[in-house]
Length: 110
Image (cartoon, rainbow, N blue to C red; front, side, top):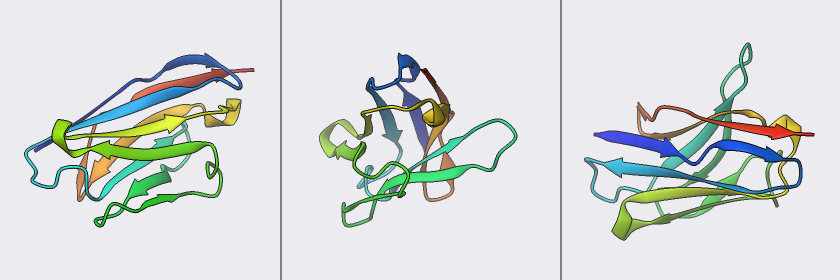
């Protein structure tokens, strides 16, 4: 069972990035995928999730700017991030159950 996050990078404020979380070792692989982010020195923060019945849910801080989705055939979940702000800078992680993927760094410059 593994989760592999990718897609981070450096972007200017107002820009977009799409993160991907490749899931292996699960049936219904994208159900119940959550995204979190963490700034050094701060607690890990929940960002968004696809519930087990594939409903998207979002933290208030990203609602209207981020979109969570998934492709079951590719066993991959996505986090589309638009209108990025400097305060979105963090290491982003995907999670399913108790399994965490490695993080991918998103840096938003002002």
